[in-house]
Image 1: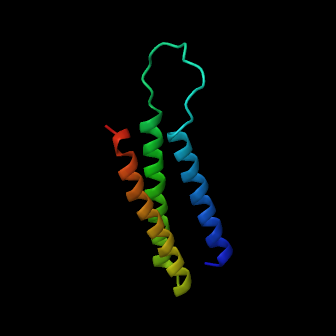
Image 2: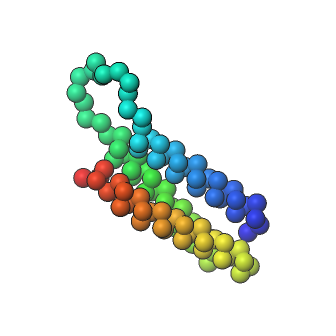
Length: 100
């Protein structure tokens, strides 16, 4: 895995997890709501999307590391898988209350 591809993987990871985190933590509205009460499903949906992305990311990176013939590329792919697994654990600890 060349350095450029590795950085592209990292950029995709940061963009997707950053966007989903931003959707999970929106800025509060400046004016009061005038609508009726409704049930907001955004937190469970975005939390499940974030976890699904992290599990898929970790799985794909681990499989890429296992099928790679170059040891340096395999090491980078396993590093990406470790980053995904670590972030999945961290985000589970942070957002577990969104799924009930």
